[in-house]
Each structure stands twice: as C-alpha cells, then as structure tokens.
Amino acid sequence: MKPITVLLAEDHTIVREGFRKMLELDADLEVVGEAQDGRQAVALVKKLRPDVVLMDIAMPLLNGVEATRQVLKAVPATKVLMLSAHSDDAYVQTATESGAVGFLLKQTSSQDVCRAIREIQKGKTFFSPSISRRQDRLHPESRDRNGQPHKKAAQLTSREMEVLQLIAEGKANKETASELGISMKTVEKHRENLMSKLDIHDTAGLTRYAISAGVIENSVQLTIV
Image (tube, rainbow, N blue to C red; front, side, top):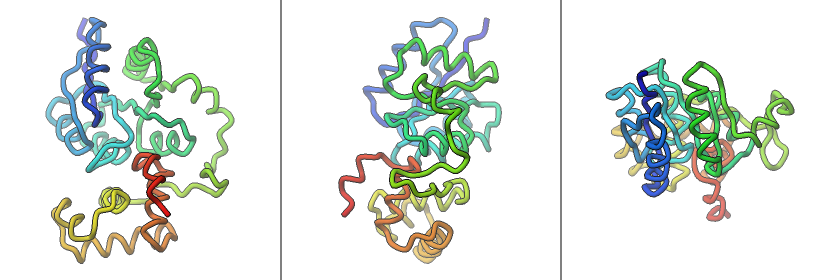
C-alpha cells in the first residue's frame, strides 16, 4: 500500500525533527520534505506534491494561513493540517477559511497527529479534541479577545496578507518592498488598502489585527504599547 506523503512546514528545527521522528514510526506515513517558512512550503508543495502538509500557522516571511491559500491554489489535491500553540477561536476560523481541513494544537498526542493525517487523507476533517468540543458552540461571527467582531482575513488579497505580515513583524516600507520585490509606492498602496479594508489606521492596530488573526505569533503582543 502506498504511504501517505507528508510535508512538514515549521520554522523551529527541533519541532520539525520531533514530528519527523514521530511520523517515521508509522509505515503508512512518509515525510517527503521539510520547510522552515511559508514561502519554502509553497515551493516544495509545487515540487513534491505531497498528500498532506503539516503547516505551522505562524512562520516568518509567509505565515501558514497565506501559505495554505497559495498551496491549495497551486496543488488543490494536497490537504493542509494546521498546527498552532494557540487554540483561539479566531485562529481556528482563519485557518479553516484559508482551506485547512484540520487544526491541531502542538500539545496534541502523537497518536492524534497520525490519526489526523489519515482522516484528512480520506476526505474528512480533524480538530484537536479540545477544539472539536467547541465547534458546535461557535457563533457564525467570531469575536476577538475584547468581544469585538473579528474581521475576516479572507477579505484581503494574497499580496495584502504578505504586506500585513511584514508590517506586523516590524519591517519598514523599504524592507517590505525589497522582501517582496515590489516598489515602495506599491507597498504604500497596499498599506492604504489594508487600513481601508480593515478600518484600522495605524501600524499598532494592524499588528494587533495580525495577532488576532493568527498571522504572527501571539507573543508579539508583548511589544505593542
């Protein structure tokens, strides 16, 4: 029987190694590649066409949410299983809106990780038990930690999501332009579009939004005044 091929997308080497060793114990699962950021994940999916991607939600250069959108656009047959240290409803909603068919907490047991891969390969969905128990109680309009309606990241274009992440990571317009290979004028236009679409009018607000949507790690909040 042909094994289920898996790509690991996780920016922490020690975590990737742990997942690889865990999956290698099961003969029906085969790790075919590893990516340390979202852009590398998209490139490797196009090259290797794995059955499943274990995708960290928060990675440098391109986060897991936007990487998932690009992966599914390029290789629709690939299934994405999102990984996160956080179980916020907003994170789960953003992940599923991007096309992920499962969401696992990094504290999930190895048995559940392997089971999740097999289930989504069969066309089913899979969530960590603690998240799954909440799904039936989710309100159609998710809310952030302050009880305010959560603005959907899905209304943003792929390029706007990339610009949003780099802004939230503290990159200046010049750095963002260089990273994405576009002009500063184009970056400024994307920034204006972000503020208009999200009704947010300062960098700190964009950063807080990026955190609430799972675009960057929750710990970044500590640096926001």
